[in-house]
Image (cartoon, rainbow, N blue to C red):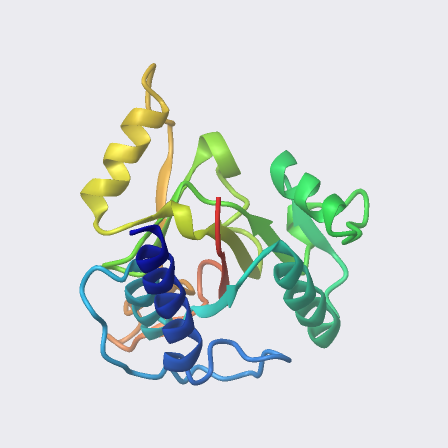
Length: 212
């Protein structure tokens, strides 16, 4: 039974790399094209990848934290991003483990990109559920680029599953701010024409790491 489950899991992860023809490929080309592919209900990784990419999010799958570090360093080097804002201790510890240096004294207002975690990923809508208890109120909103690091164990199917997770995690009271981030900011207020990157990040990346 265990061997069968593991094999099924490996097949799902293999499909992600095959199905996303351009899943923010190294060295992270400047493109908004999103491939379309068949999603088998129940494969949350694939569902999230498709829906997030359809909303102009830049998705990348990492088999472990070492691959995550390699992809991040390639992204930072290609885009020449040096001012990286990280407000969460767990991400600082992750970067320390993988020997990724963070420059000191970077303010959110002056950064090239802000890097956060999330509470969970909503597969059905391709959304990242963020809370003020984890990422703060501004880290994912005011930076020109938002980079989210998540793990496959954080995937849930629908919005109600995300809310249930929040209720269980914070039994004494839910955080004062809960945000659903689904790709770059967008508005249709200007002559009913959809414009992206107006009042928030112009680019949103999600690095999905296998495990935890």
